[in-house]
Amino acid sequence: MSTKTKRILVTAAVLVAASALAACAPDAGGGGSTAGGTAANAGNDGGNNASNCTNTIPKKDLPVVTFWGWYPNMQLVVDNFNKQNNEVQVCWTNVGQGGDEYDKFQTAISAGTGAPDVIMIEADRIPTFQIQNALVDIKNYGYEAVKDNYSAGAWKDVTIRGGIYGVPVDGGPMGMIYRKDIFEKYKITPPKTWAEYEQAAQKVKDAGGPLFGDLGANVPAVMMALQIQKGANPYTYDPAKPETIGIKLNDQASKDVLEYWGSLAKKGLVGTQDQFTPEYIAGVVNGKYATYISAAWAPGYLTGAGVGKGEDTGKWAVAPLPQWDPDNPVQVNWGGSAFSVTSQAKNPELAAKVAYGLYADDESLTDGWTNQIIFPLNLKALNNPDFVNLKVAFFDGQQANKEVYVPAANAYQGMTYAPFGQYYFDAMTKQISAMIEGSVTGSQAADRLQEDVVNYAKEQGFTVQ
Image 1 (cartoon, rainbow, N blue to C red):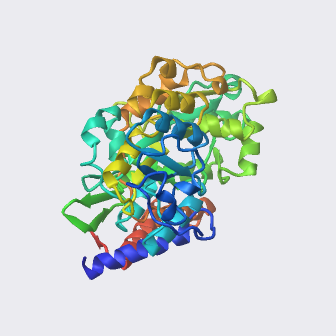
Image 2: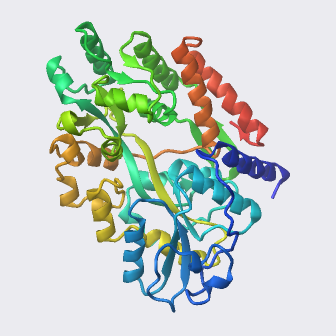
Image 3: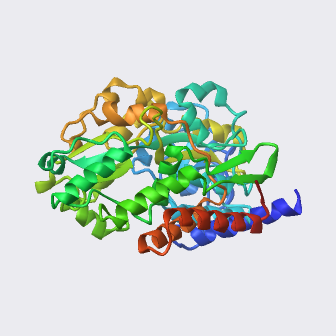
């Protein structure tokens, strides 16, 4: 390994530790992986072993693969896998959600021990761990047998330089959620283009109505998705040159999208409240916003936050995401997670069998989508007539999957994420905030973002194209 590559790996480790969503103490167990051992003898391998399972392993003579994950129905999913599998059993532990888990994983990576065999990771975080050699390319461990279970776009999200570093489980095809009562009051039909979106926003404002949407600086992934929708290609990799990366954050498409949203905010057509906050949710409940640009997981999130209940019941619907060019529609994604095999797995092939098979049976998938836990990427569920034709209660019985989310998922072509994604998102948030404050234009924000991220990449040892 070159000195340059080592420097990239060390900095990636520091970045993960510094940018995790929530700080937490290192994993006290500190034990190694147990793949290839059995449930009976795995307890000799430290803290991360079958003796610490949240679940009960029914077939104790089989090899055990350890797994970290945080889906709310993980217990059911693991039990289903173990019940149906006669080759391997899963020992599951929930060490925390998102940043909490990533902190523990980073500690294990740095220590060289203590990581599970299989780990749940959000798709945009996979490159950050892959560049540290913390994940295994599972393309030669059963990919051909299951590749047709997922779309090409779903696979692209977990592909880095030709290698497969995760099995896609859930995604976030995007759409436009809107208040039916507000649209009816102001005689608005769901806009099909972003030009129509601005026209509708102006019409509602002129009539004394509420804000049409929100530009939240703390959701930079939405801005990135909309820039990609317009034709931006933020990051490119050369498979033959792992230390080289292409960065283009200030192309015309990226500038146009920032200018568009900055203009909406300046005209008072959309708000500038940070999302996922009590203030924002209160505004959503109280009809402060006519639309919410979000993803297929939003109904579950909003329901859990208290939206769509009481007097708010039956007021919500969803339409396809507006397009920049209606003659060339592009569907984009926000969010989603995958199951990855870690480089500390003693038996990567057995661990890959778990990654491919976990949350892939009909019962688990059905439980996931019926309880609004996941938007499944497995085509067995995505093409299931019961899922496609589901009348979604949050949307007052609208067949949201059939009309919006399934077509968007099927048309999604995938994204290329950065190996320093959190730094990029933080830098994007900084520039969107400056744009909202009026100290920079959208174009200037894009130029500053380009300069910031390119400098950072070079400091980490990358050659930037």
